View 1 (cartoon, helix red, strand yellow):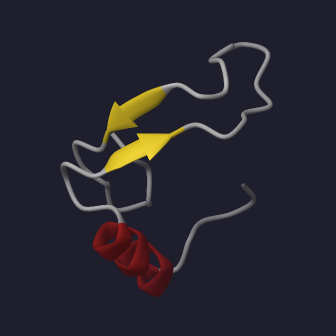
View 2: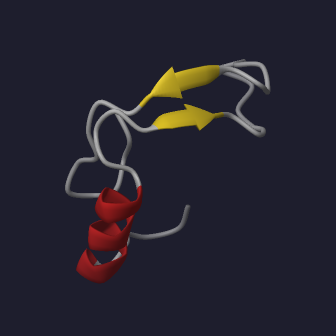
View 3: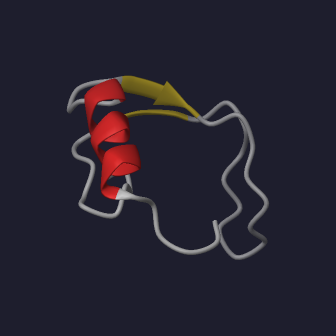
Length: 53
């Protein structure tokens, strides 16, 4: 991701992924965090820069 998300984009993400939403990783290109596609989890929160936790 380049730069920061706008407040409007972060608001949309928070509305789309409220706490408790189930998510599944489609893919990730990060050799330092090798997480396999298909891993599933539950959103705990979305912070003010749009990062899921």
